[in-house]
Length: 389
Image (cartoon, rainbow, N blue to C red; front, side):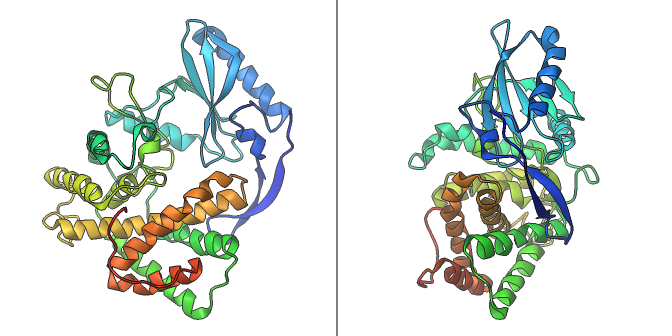
């Protein structure tokens, strides 16, 4: 079945520029059937695989959906004549740039992390061939009601995070600077509030949001700078075939930047798809903090005292998480309204809970909490927040 491309003007990252993008129909991401946006894309893929067939013993007729993510990339699985499987990334070049994926893959591999090898890459057409690291991500074996079973996995994940951060150096990855932090925050009023909730903020509400954004950005920029995966969470770790001899594999790293050390630990423990009780979150965070401190990652770069005061560090992680939660709420609304990916909206209440829990802890964020309650039509019941974060 062939689906035609849909065309729509899109505002680029809130910077006032526009361009015409082709949007892939939902059938492109169908996990039960392999469909193509155009016959030309299908022919290009099959021709590329034909050129690799002998080298990798490919069986092109076995090509099938493997997974899709929140971007316009998708992953296809295919068999080989020797009984193995490989994974192909299909990233239409007009929508996705594979070069950051390749760059970060090399950086992570050099840091000693387990990431997919790149067996073949057609840069012009957006096709990559990689080993198949399996079908089970870490989140598939986690249970919110059994944090004791998750302890070892999360300690392992923080060790991988430290390994990645210790390889950091400036001027290699794009900066997670003020402009980017603010563009991401703007997704919340533009997509979640205005388009998803259908709400127009008055001047006072806009001022409240602007003041909160200023404080969040200032807190984020005060952090020591390291390599940031930017989506470091359980769904992006692939379980090893043998946990005794292999580490978790790290996936979905193409959006990595150089920015706040607080971002990835906030992403890990305030997950988009699973929530933990606060005692678990604090336990893993303090263990990470101790190791980061000993490794010198929290040293002179921070004037906040993070290296000696866990409470100050934890506050910074929460505020960094708040930036992420606001951004992701906007992204999930955009995925539904613009891209036809409606499943993500089901997890929006988790992010609203994260936002409200963090805002309820800090007096400076009380006005933002009140605004969120107005947006969500929640009756105020202000106080300290405990429980799942």
